[in-house]
Length: 204
Image 1 (cartoon, rainbow, N blue to C red):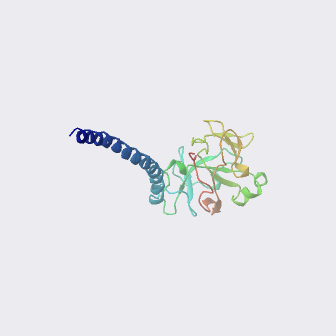
Image 2 (image 1 turned 135 degrees about the vertical axis):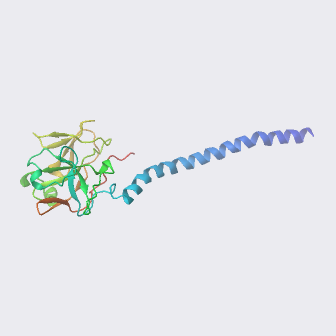
């Protein structure tokens, strides 16, 4: 009797430990899945909702701020040498892709002779388009250094060169700003393709 009771007590003590182990395993497996889902949901949304989809070939650009918000941007609206014009892409049916902040763009018009060969090849009439989100921690890029023709992030002072494919020229940003190749149709800049590179920062 005593052994049986002792055996039964031992089983009872092991059962909670087994339950804890099962729970730990479930958490160990579940957390990565949850993390994966959390990352996948915005991507899925971006694929399904036209407002959140990334810029595509044929998109025009509209003003993102100011008293002309929503108006289609023409080449003439973009001052040569900057400052950049904040923009969102707009699909051919008129849907503005403002459902994701990763669609923020900066349009700037530069002298052709100032552009690197690669950048010139993806520009039109000197107009280039870049992501407006820093690749370091994802801050909005809101500053412009006119004297050196650079974008500057206000959070950690990363700087990017729009003349040379958005190359990092200062600060901690780990990679260049993604570009959107541009063509001009009837005086209006139009996206010639989607982003070259993933916009925003990428957690490690």
